[in-house]
Structures are given as C-alpha cells and as structure tokens.
Amino acid sequence: MGPDRPDEFEPPEILQIPPTVVGGDPIEEKFLKRLGYGKKIDTPRHIRALSSSAIKQVLASIEPKAIVAFTPISSISKDAIHACGVSVESPLWADLARRSGHPITMAVLALTLGPLPDQDIAYEKTMNLTDRFMLHEAAALVVELLADDLSERLENHKRVQGLHPLHRFSPGYCDIPLAVQAAFFHFLNPPLIGIRLCDSGAMIPSKSLTAAILFAPDPPALSPCPQCDRQGCRHRRN
Amino acid sequence: MPSAASILEDLSRAVFAGQPEEVLRIFRTGETEAFEAPSLLSALTSGLHEARKKLAAAAATVAEFLLSVDALHAGVGCLKPRLSEPQNKPRVVIGVVQGDVHELGAEIIAGVMDAMGYSVLRLGTGKGPDQFIEALNSSRAKLLGLSSMMTTTLPAMRETIERCRRACPDVRIMVGGAALDSSIAQTMGADGYAASVVELPDELERLEALAGSGEEERKYTDYERKIQVIEKGSRHGA
Image (cartoon, rainbow over all chains, first blue to last red):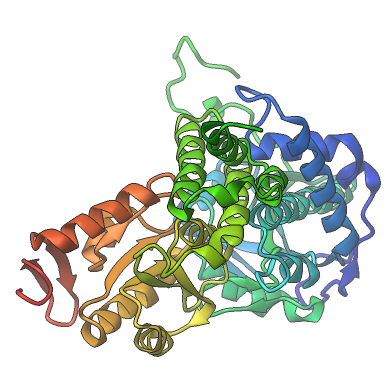
C-alpha cells in the first residue's frame, strides 16, 4: 500500500482468493442463509447440492481484480466528505464522519469478479432459471466476501500506521447517490481492471463494486454519548 | 397401472416439489398420452399455483419456487407439440430499460410467463424505446413488461412507457423491479405493477379482466404538459 497521496495510485492488484474467505463450509452456510434458509426454513438436501455446485462454478470462473487508492481528507462539510481528488456527497456519512474520531484518510476501492460470471448467468447459456438464480446469488455473495477481505487487508495496513477504520460505504447505499460512482471512476480508473461504468451508474461486469473507507487517528466511539450535550443523562455512557 | 387421477396428481406434485426430472419421467412413460393437453397443463399449473402460495406464505424460498417453474417449463416443453396456439394468452415483450444491467429479475418474470403459456419475446438489457416499439409492432404483442432495478434508470422507464403508449396504444404495460412501487408505476403511466413473481399472476388476471370489462381507469403524470391525466374506458372508447 502506498503513501497517502492522491497522485500515487496503487497499481491494479489481482487478488488471490484465500480459501478460508470464500471456500469451504463457511461460504456454503452464508450462501444458504442468503437464500433464506436457517431461521424458519430448513435446507432441503437438493437445495444444498445446488448451492454447493453454484459456488464451485462461480469460484472456478472468477478472475478477481481490485484497484485501491488512498487519499487525504481535506474537509468534512455538512453535506459531503472532500478528499484530494474525490468528493462524496452524503449528509449522513459526513455526519457520521464528523462524530467518528476525525478521519484524515479515505481509501477508495473498486473490485470485480471479471466477465465470466455474467456470461454463465446469461439466458443464452442456460434457460434453467434455478441455475441462473443460484449462480447470480453465489456470485453476489462472493463479490461481497472479497470486498470484506480486501477491506480487512486495508484496515490492517492502516492500523499499523495508527489509524482506525470506520464502516465501508458504497454508492447507491445509505444516502450516497449513485452519481458518486462517476467520481470514484474518475479518481480510480477502474477500466484498468476491466470495469466499465454505464451512464446510469451500473457497472459492467455486473459483479463489481466500488466503496470507500474512512480512517481516523482516534477510534470511533461505540456509543453516541460523547457527542451528546445531556451531561446529566442517567443513561450516559462515558 | 396408475389411475388417471393419480397421474395428474403426480404431475402436479412434481411441479410443486420442484422436480423437473420427475415431470419428464412421467411424460416419458407415455401414460400422459391418454389425457387431453389442457388437463395436463392444468395439472402442471396447479402445482405451480401451490408453490406460489407456499412462497407467498414465506414457507419456501425463491430457489425452491424457481425449481417449480423449471419443472413446469419441462412439462410445457413436453406438451408443446400437442398445444395449438399458446392457450389464448397474449404475446408479451419483456425487457430491462436502457441503462440498467440487472437482467435476472426480468428473466424470472419471463420464465414464469413462459410457463403460464404466454408467448414471450425477451429483449434483454440496453434497449431504448425505439427497440421496444419495433419489437411490439413486429411481434404484435399486446403486453409489454419493463423492469428497472435502479432509481437512476426510472427516467428511461418513464420515457419508454410514454413512447410505447403513444406508438402502440392497444398495448398494456406492466412494470416491476426494485426501483419501483405501485405508486411510482402508476405515476409513470403503467397499467400494471407486480412487486414480485408472487403477485404476477393476480396482476395479469386483473389486467385481462379490466381489458375485457371496458372499465379501465389509468391515472398518470404527463411530464411534458405537467398535468395529471385520468383516462377512463377501454383503449378504443376512451
């Protein structure tokens, strides 16, 4: 990971998938949970077999790549977080950032599974709806797990430098508009790893994501009490 | 030799249980030859109806329901040579509005409508209003299904609805997808809206009944003239 200067982009990095992250029983259990099994509905044996097969097919087809850059935060206004080279309009995230240990650095990342999962899901490949649905869901889970893994790596890297991570956010979630996607693309240049951005904010390949993580010197407060003025409140936790 | 009733029950049960191979096995035995195609079709669709009820009651997952759809599909495939015009159901054009790349939801709807006997023309993703109009004209479809999973593509959906309505006034337009609810669908001028595949058959039935009754009423916003429009009566009599 490079220094926190926006002019020093990380080169595209091809991720090797650690089996502990996206292989074996944990991913199968997560997948079944994603499909709606576990709490109220028991998993039928044939669904377990289909799930296992879908995960194997996805893992065999993916060519995960990610691109990451760190940039210093210049200011946090009421409505946006401004960093060198990229701004994110999001009143809620900006509010959270202001309350969370004075973040000074933002990591921006893009990640893709590559084009093959989309091709496997295509109607031309198979008309079987169940297979397509399973592959789609398995690929969606894998991209999320890879993003978790990448985030953890970035967070560990920054922890060594004494910085604490806040939650990861993506365009289109919370109040971050999809329009921010264009700013991320301008900043990161994800076409270097094969991700194309549509005017609508959608990405091709579809199993791709972008995200940002803030890092602060102070650990984020686990309770909102330090930001609250009611000093005498009997529920106050310091 | 199994009784007539038991063969029909077995077919229905195999669809309900999501067992395409079992459906094919029953057809391969040749015992179904003794039945009229409509009776067999009715047995198959009753299985899907029960599967849909189970999904609606949250007692089954989407994956299990799609297995039932695939099982029905397998049966309809066997029946096709014995069915004349696809059960008097209208032809339908289905596609994802321009800018959106999420195809699977529309595909699931297309698969279910296929299985219900509709003649479905899939346009896939990335098609603008002109291509929808061309497909409606060339296929002489009476129903258009549009999907959008992203709020950023709703303007494209609105434009597609408006243009298709002007060019093909007899066509009924049904919409769905994560970016919509019934109120947005109505505002944009759609005739029908299904939140999921569970609501689809009832909504289709409602549209067909309305079309036959001459009591159609459609409220929508005409964005060009900036007025609310209420259309009453049948398309031809309005």
